[in-house]
Image (tube, rainbow over all chains, first blue to last red; front, side, top):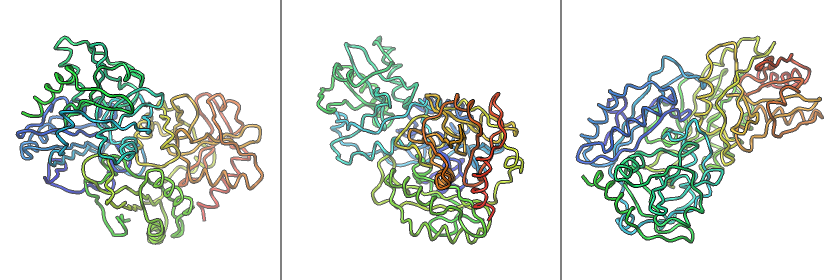
Length: 271
Length: 271
């Protein structure tokens, strides 16, 4: 579908964009089903948080309205939303007169093999580590070279995702997913206070799991924790939940907690 | 001056650019004097290194030719060069069919107060720290949110630059400059193996200083080293060398080594 820039059909952005120059902005990848943006309020809340942390002034009401109208026109697929700080003269100093730009792009849903969801996926052990930067941690900002480097590490399609550690060796996330472990019946996911993205599906699953009375623990996790996990899965807002069946020499089968949370995700995405 | 995209006049970039989506590319800021790009071979070498580390395939001969012709047309000013990995479908995986894009933009030289060069500058103590990421360290890539955050920390024009530390507390660089200290007659500059940009003017000064028989030390430096420095200066490829006269409670006067290296930089930039 034709992209929109600030609500108007457009396919190009001026070369003075701070989005291009510095990655100065945030983005969201939103599933669209039946003309509706799935988990819209969570996506908008993360945009709001990112813009606040980066001191980008964006009119969220206008953005919401545009996303709603774009999703209605797209019908089914994936909507990518970018908010940049706008244009500026040369130099890092933000121009106080610059206005944030809103970019919406839409395309079909990615066609993942059904086995990813049903039987699970194998994770590639990425050697690219995530740097620890608390000022940017959790945000889905446009500085994504670490993910580009990590995703370029493998081309073998038997790996659906890659697992990334931080520079200190903690488990953090997939290249485009968040990571969950089930250990002794409790649901664990790595903290994203130092690095990593606070995923929208991650937030939804954490809240719904807590609502079901499950024990939910957000904390530091290490590769050794994988060996004691009974279940492992990855999630994001586009594909939902994939059980992890293999990582290096470790093997898991999709377990009951994974299937329960997968059901929650897919109730949102299969609507 | 009108920008060029892949050698053709252009002012806009397609919204599918990986430069916008991920900051997936590198840039250079090149001084142009008398129609010539100053330190052109060093800038091109850094582009080559950055593209190699990021696995971006760019034709350097074509790029050199475009920069030479653009600089000749610009005459005087600053040429900004961006190389992106090109466009791609959704997702971090690079499209092997995608071609790198070359963007050239030109403008006037920034009008810094002459006192910056003559009497020196005051550095703002940035609280934004640089994350340590050896895979990207040294490169002038398009992921520059740390610099955006750091530069936004001050608006008081009495600070011409800001000083940035890494997350471990080491001295690294200015927001848009490299840092040098003179201690006991030796020239020291922080290593950029963990973070920071390996500046083109930094490289030129290091080589010329070594050629003059000066002791040159590239190593870890800490804030305490500032207190024992006899001279401090910052440099980049656009303004050359500025003596540092103040940082927090510390004060320096422009010293003989600073003036010597300033002469080298300005012989290049005042030509």
